[in-house]
Length: 302
Length: 302
Image (cartoon, rainbow over all chains, first blue to last red; front, top):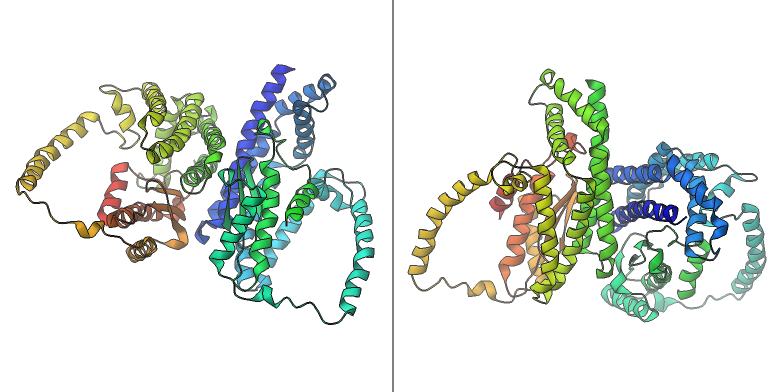
């Protein structure tokens, strides 16, 4: 058992390192990379994704995980080791269903689409982005078919964000939310005169916006020794490990909430990522339980 | 022949992508990475270096290159394909002599040393850097012994910078240079009063220093659509592909030459890297012939 666990940890550590490098390739593309670097970057992301997938889906990994799952009852179910085995086994079953070529195609297509999206957005030209979006949808459908599903094709995709969640359950939740929100919005609209939010749309010095946001999230507890903030076309958070978490924000000179709420929101994501136990680093368990959990953290702080 | 060349190109493209990702991991460490990210970054660099080495030194690669070398006479010796085969075969022979564990240890050690060096430099504390330097020297000696040499151990290391050059040849060149330089320096010193360079040591606005350097190298021809400049502790140039070349500079408020000559020097390196033929991208031939060539470009522009 101990030997097998050590073997699994060593293998997952290598795969985690590849995923960290992939996260950096993506972060750099959205924050620093000159536009001319885009085609080669897509190849780099595609190659590393394929290698990470290959390393994770070997027959040896399958045997190792089967052996560990057979002994899982000997571990404390709340232990990190038991979680590591369960998560890796579940991820393996899913990864094994995807051909490496599909992983390579999807990641290359998505990377090229980022550049097209940025340019299309700047020139308000959807036609420029449309062929990329069509390719992404087609490849995503192929992924869903490869994973398989019972009721709805989106169940296969939803599982990536909310493990075990079904589209029908989300529809039930959304229906309840809609039933509460629609009357609320109607009531607000029926009041007539909207609240005056002109003060949000005055000129605010960009550097002061940046500095204020940094002060706010430092006070929240975002740790700049283990993270940083940059600017990007759309704000996001990415994490190489819990010791290196990258936020981005977007400053609009004449709209105060853009940078401030973006920074607070992303810091919520970032503090969640910074909070994973150091002992879990490079195990693949140092990852969000689900997108819902992640978003609960970002929205709470925002 | 055609099939074998295609197979080699596909394999080298993957390995090039790994090296590009490694270059980004190194660039980010010196320009952006928060200090807390250092230990995990060293593991990422070590893992990717080991994987790139493993992928390059397979027995299949050896057979493929042997087959291509046997047919090399059928190619135009000046063709890109012939160069690709020769370079890959030479690199393979050398890489095969290094154990993967040594590659992993060396790259991890070097990455950790960067962080120690930065902190030691800031606090002028050589004792902090010394143990890292000792490890690097010990591992470098192991590399030299693994590669082998005839006359001088440094011949094995020099070959990485100037292929086929021997330490004894460098000593001859240096002797000639010394014979000319020592009397020149003596003559300058004997003139007595040194030239007044106080104007170099006045206050120069950092942003204006940056902007002026950017203007100068843009006029040189450095292409910012396929590159960028950042700040780092010590200036350097790195290249992910010829379409994404990164320079750094270091601004000193009270010493004008630091940023300006650094920027011009690195732009010389950068333009050399940007000048590789696009057709050579991801072949491993899109690399400097030697460090001497590289430095001739940087010093000429500086």
